[in-house]
Length: 431
Image (cartoon, rainbow, N blue to C red; front, top):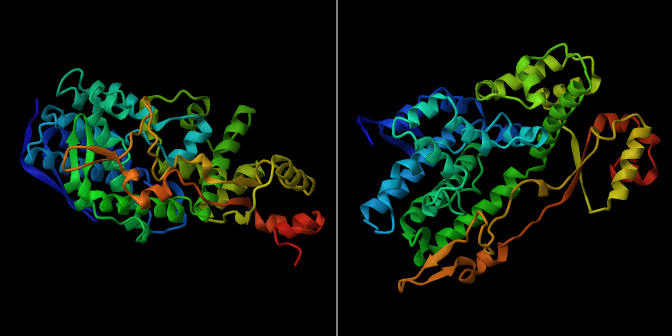
């Protein structure tokens, strides 16, 4: 059953101005300890080391996704669109609010090293014995499973999934605007109100009114600019590389029987891959950074150096390079090893293919997660948007970028004279 608050709650928000909560269940979910934990997880991971304003949390982002979803549904209901199933309102709002519940500290870096997936953790938190689960069960016994199914993209009604996970979902629209605001750039701005006005429910999917094509073009170009100017910024990549190396080195040492001076039972369970939901709740960025401060005094010089670099922002330097084959990279690693550097930790060859990214892909096939953006004409006909837009067609499936080599500049410079002349030249060390 749906219960409305006697008086709606309002959050002041720098992106949406106000976020309105009218449902008792949404208010109760916000006040659970699992949702409050998102205050202690940054939305943009290590990006604050590049753009110092990027300190915003997944808590504020999750509220923003909820608010955009609420606005979309309200518009559908005001216009009385027959294709919007009004009985799905509450499950859609809850899924929008809770979609990032399973993100860990510095989420994507930790996921890579420890083979974790935040979607799986979200679904565990929703369905196991948690405060969130108990609130959701106040609606019905199967309501936690229904909300989890939306987030895991197995919900039987695809239009509900599209609100939270699609190529024009509330998640993407909020993070572009919010990340642009807190990083201080203008790349991610677009006309959100216009886009919300041209969205339509149509035969089990969400489409765009044909007259709104230019607003969508603006949205996709904003997304393109944000990826290459903010999300793939080479300095941010450097901090992510060092972060992954810390996790990898600590895990390697633990598996080798190393006795840490500073450690915790929680980190041991993380290394062993047997975290409980309660453990996961305690795993936040404050805890991780506290461990890094302790590890700065470890006997293992490599781990201590990596932690000092991360905490003091002494990041690896990078140079842009043309593509070379694996034999060439192996030769550089061998030279590093011969002069006393670590072949696996003191050189990283990076190209941002390892991050999930496409500005837009129209070639959706049955079974894929992201169907294309469709335009709805006044005659009721549907057309995939890149067929109508030269701008979108020009960036469809586009990947660009450069290879970067990351390395500890001061350690390499001290031993530059021992390197082969061509490698000295590559790193600019023969001056």
